Length: 328
Ligand SMILES: Cc1cc2nc3c(=O)[nH]c(=O)nc-3n(C[C@H](O)[C@H](O)[C@H](O)COP(=O)(O)OP(=O)(O)OC[C@H]3O[C@@H](n4cnc5c(N)ncnc54)[C@H](O)[C@@H]3O)c2cc1C
Image (cartoon, rainbow, N blue to C red; front, top):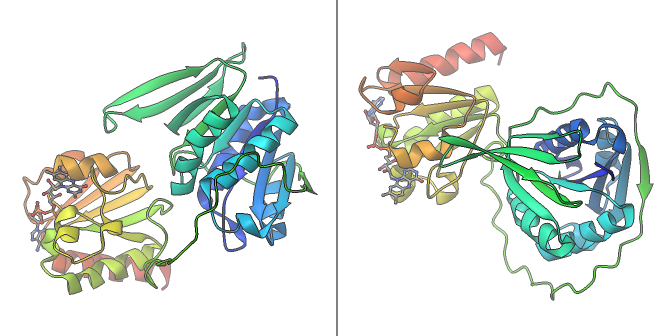
């Protein structure tokens, strides 16, 4: 590859989000000697910039402007493309977040680049061709995509790349004036924002552990058992559609074909039968544990570990054991 690789870093509060750190790790390998540039947009960027500089970015560019504090796809894409043109980068890597998925296509369109999203592996050939792998057909096949042009945008799948360690040299942090944003559509006005419920744990897309519940929970108040198990593991709680359709949990919890697609390190399915529409949303999880009273439940066909039994006995016992082992 001829030019450096640019990573768009998102933040939650003052810290970079975990998916952005994964993007730094993925881009670090890809960049090789061509240089890795990270861009942060918004206000109070210094703490996140220092973290990113210690993780392998040769240069971290901060663009301090309060307009970027709220994610706006057109505004962010305009700024990032302007930076990419100025720095003559070859590749933009975007984290697999909700915002990142919005950015990938916009960046490619504005920059005139080839794009691929949902990527789980990337490499560059000696000829400079970027080769990306991505699961397709709900994880039943892996597609190889070759991007041969001079400009490419790569959107990653969450939890597919390890976070980088801080073993290498520390990069520089430079402040950059707000770039020319070109023709940016008028910004919409935010009329309301409903934050995640307090105590809901990490965002599902970012969570390394997800404890998901189905109709087997029998009543919404029994989700307390899963919340306690998730808390003991530092994880998030998800749900099947039977649960969200019943109004036991908001649709934002739903995992599956018409819900969220997740790929945590550990997915614990509790009282979920394993309908195909649920499986497509969690099949790429690293390790799947199923707890179900029916030994013939389809979830056991995809589970790495299965516990046949009554969740109302197993889940509290599991939580108690984890708390004991972890000293909670
Ligand atoms: C177009 C379409 C899109 C869909 N999209 C989605 C989607 O995005 N996500 C999704 O999840 N579903 C989706 N569905 C619905 C899907 O087909 C299933 O109906 C749904 O996943 C079932 O949810 P469940 O496993 O919680 O409930 P059930 O299928 O009723 O399973 C409950 C399970 O709990 C077990 N159980 C009961 N009591 C206990 C106990 N005490 N201890 C342990 N286990 C117990 C039972 O053995 C059973 O296996 C979709 C369907 C359609 C048609």
